[in-house]
Image 1 (spheres, rainbow, N blue to C red):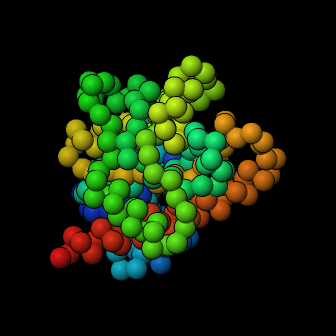
Image 2: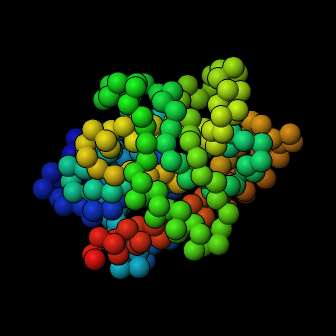
Length: 242
């Protein structure tokens, strides 16, 4: 494929994990039973392997909706049918500490990419079965998690304080940059997408930890999110085989 740089005749596993960070793709590979590098180009690092008997691929998408949409388009053409975004996000409720795991049921469409696919009136909603598998994996892990609507935006360093306050009031749990695009593009392509995130910040915390402590907490949350995503894939695969 043009951007991911793999032969068009290559057949990928039915399940794919989509981290933004190429480094996170490698950390997911470390948590798998087997993983092999397929290609590296720009923000896209693609690996294939297996976890507990289930074949799965991992592809980083970089930052934002445009590159995430490219990855979804190209991977779906190579055979991937079910995706889980394994990302980072800012917590958006004061009771969500840094390092928390958050599963998204949908997203506020504050991005531009999704509007190129479907009108803004179309909801950005995570696939129900994928989300249910994520929740089941989180429950079985015994790890605490948050569930709710995310806020997808393009301009990382720009804040709309009035909108931030409104979204807080209606219970939005996290802010990030890819979910809405992935949910809408998936709907247009007829594939499934869910999202599990680890929080690396929270603008509403009354006290902010040091940068080093934020990083430590985030890395712990990231490990939990990776584990939950991999277990969710196993759960989805077991239902697929029935």
